[in-house]
Image 1 (tube, helix red, strand yellow):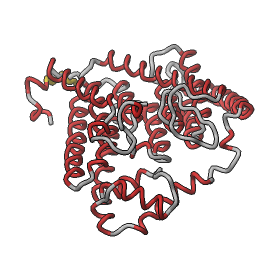
Image 2: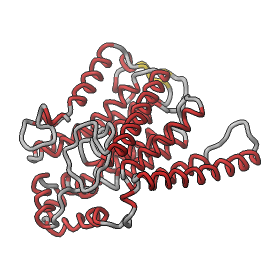
Image 3: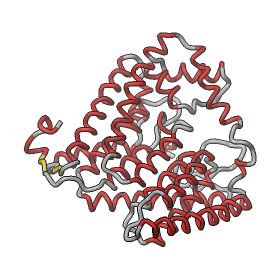
Length: 387
């Protein structure tokens, strides 16, 4: 949609045009918050603050390196996906817990709305937002930029809904809508993960106020009802045409393309593997040698844009940071995040300009468990004292 005004994801245009307007807004909001009032941290929030600073520092070192080596275009997704996600996490950290939880609920509500729009789009076979790609089979996008993004977000949100303060019937209704949105999107990996995720939520989470025996009986009953209800939903989805992409085996042309793309390493030099290469040159090789239109593999993109050694460092730092965000959360957040990672790694979500990572960071910050009550005033002590 932004391409209607500037050259955001199309060829041409200056570097500032390659960053989303929302990215500028989030950076401006973060600066305004940090300037206008002190950042007061409590207990585990100090370690979160340090973690955000460390990962942000790595990104701020990586971006100039890409500019100096003539790969400024490759820094676009790093800024638009990873750096802006860190900025959003810092904004969440500056808010009190009640506001964070409220924003988490708003974010989940928007994903549910996106799921509903996706379901309606699947029924009427018409997108409500501009979608530039032509596909052999219609797939809805909801409020997302791509059907796979819709499926990934819907599947991820299922687990986080369990953490909301909403009434039980609202949670159940939202989970059903999110599950239906995942199915409607045609994202097969996300749908399979959503099925496993839902079963995990009904079996491994503790049920308060019940004895162990009562928990076993209740979980067995709910799991049985979930399986029966899920089977009924799948039959209904199949009858409605939502599962047309499952008519063929999952090991189809799309799966083959995600495997074939690794052959690109046969057509690049060892210098490219060690130190990286230009994004346009990489895509040209994939187009001409492998006859693939896109690169839907995060390991390939990171490995050949950054160079394998730097890509390994970046990946390890990312997963370490993600673990630090997860450390003070409960099981549903872990389940939702693992679902997101597995779904995202089945496509190019983590190596393209997309808001999904930022949304997951916001949800993780929204549902942190209360830690110790020790307070640290960052403005009074200075960043060096807590970094």
